[in-house]
Image (tube, rainbow, N blue to C red; front, side, top):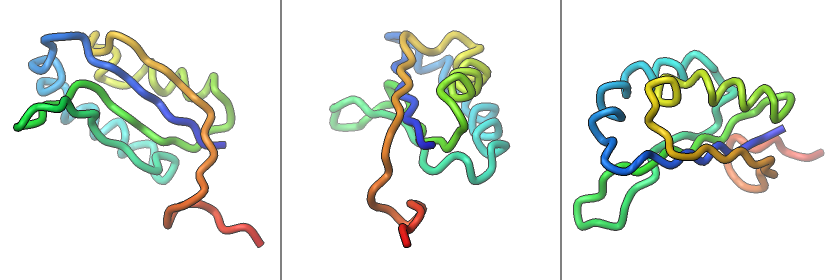
Length: 100
Protein backbone atom coordinates (compact mmCIF):
# COMPACT_ATOMS: atom_id res chain seq x y z
CA UNK A 1 0.00 0.00 0.00
CA UNK A 2 1.14 3.51 -0.70
CA UNK A 3 1.13 6.25 1.89
CA UNK A 4 2.03 9.93 1.86
CA UNK A 5 3.91 11.47 4.77
CA UNK A 6 3.39 15.25 4.98
CA UNK A 7 5.62 16.80 7.60
CA UNK A 8 5.60 20.54 8.35
CA UNK A 9 8.69 22.14 9.89
CA UNK A 10 8.55 24.24 13.03
CA UNK A 11 8.87 27.95 12.16
CA UNK A 12 12.46 29.21 12.11
CA UNK A 13 13.99 25.73 12.03
CA UNK A 14 15.93 25.83 8.75
CA UNK A 15 19.20 25.38 10.68
CA UNK A 16 17.88 22.13 12.22
CA UNK A 17 16.86 20.89 8.76
CA UNK A 18 20.24 21.65 7.20
CA UNK A 19 22.20 20.15 10.13
CA UNK A 20 20.30 16.84 9.74
CA UNK A 21 19.86 16.74 5.95
CA UNK A 22 22.63 14.23 5.23
CA UNK A 23 21.38 11.79 7.88
CA UNK A 24 17.80 12.23 6.61
CA UNK A 25 18.79 11.44 3.02
CA UNK A 26 20.80 8.41 4.13
CA UNK A 27 17.81 7.19 6.16
CA UNK A 28 15.47 7.51 3.17
CA UNK A 29 18.02 5.80 0.93
CA UNK A 30 18.17 2.90 3.37
CA UNK A 31 14.49 2.18 2.66
CA UNK A 32 15.43 1.17 -0.90
CA UNK A 33 12.65 1.08 -3.46
CA UNK A 34 9.95 1.42 -0.78
CA UNK A 35 10.40 5.21 -0.99
CA UNK A 36 8.73 6.10 -4.28
CA UNK A 37 9.15 9.88 -4.16
CA UNK A 38 10.47 12.37 -1.62
CA UNK A 39 11.36 16.02 -1.40
CA UNK A 40 10.96 19.25 0.52
CA UNK A 41 7.83 21.36 0.64
CA UNK A 42 8.76 24.95 -0.27
CA UNK A 43 7.50 28.35 0.77
CA UNK A 44 6.25 30.79 -1.86
CA UNK A 45 9.19 33.20 -1.69
CA UNK A 46 11.17 34.39 -4.72
CA UNK A 47 14.03 32.21 -3.47
CA UNK A 48 12.06 29.23 -2.05
CA UNK A 49 13.13 27.72 1.26
CA UNK A 50 12.12 24.33 2.66
CA UNK A 51 9.20 24.37 5.10
CA UNK A 52 8.48 20.65 5.32
CA UNK A 53 8.80 17.26 3.66
CA UNK A 54 6.67 14.98 1.51
CA UNK A 55 7.43 11.29 1.16
CA UNK A 56 5.51 8.65 -0.79
CA UNK A 57 6.29 5.23 0.66
CA UNK A 58 5.13 1.66 0.06
CA UNK A 59 4.43 -0.09 3.37
CA UNK A 60 2.31 -2.86 4.83
CA UNK A 61 0.41 -0.63 7.25
CA UNK A 62 -0.04 2.88 8.57
CA UNK A 63 1.66 1.74 11.77
CA UNK A 64 4.78 0.79 9.80
CA UNK A 65 4.76 4.21 8.14
CA UNK A 66 4.35 5.93 11.53
CA UNK A 67 7.38 4.02 12.85
CA UNK A 68 9.37 4.99 9.75
CA UNK A 69 8.36 8.65 10.12
CA UNK A 70 9.11 8.70 13.86
CA UNK A 71 12.64 7.37 13.27
CA UNK A 72 13.51 9.85 10.49
CA UNK A 73 16.53 11.91 11.65
CA UNK A 74 14.52 15.09 10.99
CA UNK A 75 11.85 13.86 13.40
CA UNK A 76 14.29 12.75 16.09
CA UNK A 77 16.01 16.16 15.85
CA UNK A 78 12.69 17.85 16.61
CA UNK A 79 12.32 19.55 13.20
CA UNK A 80 8.65 18.86 12.61
CA UNK A 81 5.71 20.81 13.96
CA UNK A 82 3.29 18.23 12.56
CA UNK A 83 3.35 14.93 10.68
CA UNK A 84 0.34 13.65 8.74
CA UNK A 85 0.14 10.18 7.22
CA UNK A 86 -2.43 9.44 4.56
CA UNK A 87 -3.15 6.24 2.63
CA UNK A 88 -2.74 7.08 -1.07
CA UNK A 89 -3.62 5.48 -4.40
CA UNK A 90 -0.98 6.01 -7.07
CA UNK A 91 -2.62 6.22 -10.50
CA UNK A 92 0.03 7.74 -12.79
CA UNK A 93 3.81 7.58 -12.76
CA UNK A 94 6.58 5.27 -13.95
CA UNK A 95 6.74 3.58 -10.55
CA UNK A 96 2.98 2.85 -10.29
CA UNK A 97 2.34 -0.90 -10.75
CA UNK A 98 0.60 -1.60 -14.04
CA UNK A 99 -2.75 -3.41 -13.90
CA UNK A 100 -3.13 -6.44 -16.14
